[in-house]
Length: 169
Image (cartoon, rainbow, N blue to C red):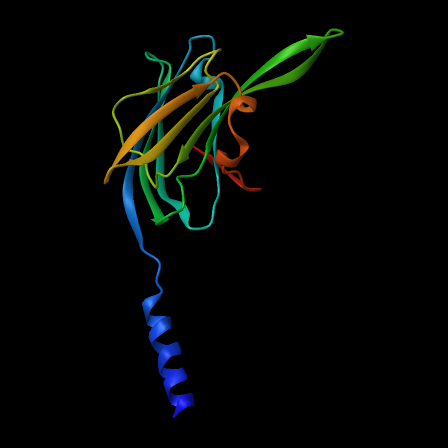
């Protein structure tokens, strides 16, 4: 009898634990200072388990020096939107030899599974990191946007990196 009760409890527990998931449309615009022309920028997304891009389309607008990312994203509740890294490729000369120099811009989310907005996020020489946080406040959520000059100023526990990136085109 005890074995049957234990088996029944295990069976009910296996039904009770689940993971919510969903899909959302994705739309965001990353705008850059004119010092960083968009034709020299490549965008990478950190791959993470539980949150992946189902389809993606990046459109470059030279008149505003921006890149709009549209598509759809599948997520498991509780897994943040993947961190995006924009790489501006340039060259410097040392001893008359060209050396590649990359400036990295980071788009980090905390507490958001997807992003859809018409307002552009603007990167400049002084804004290299944009962090969006969802904060619970009295039964609702507030969205807070923080900017930092460099990644070093961002608390490390809020930077969700992995070892694998996807290049968005």
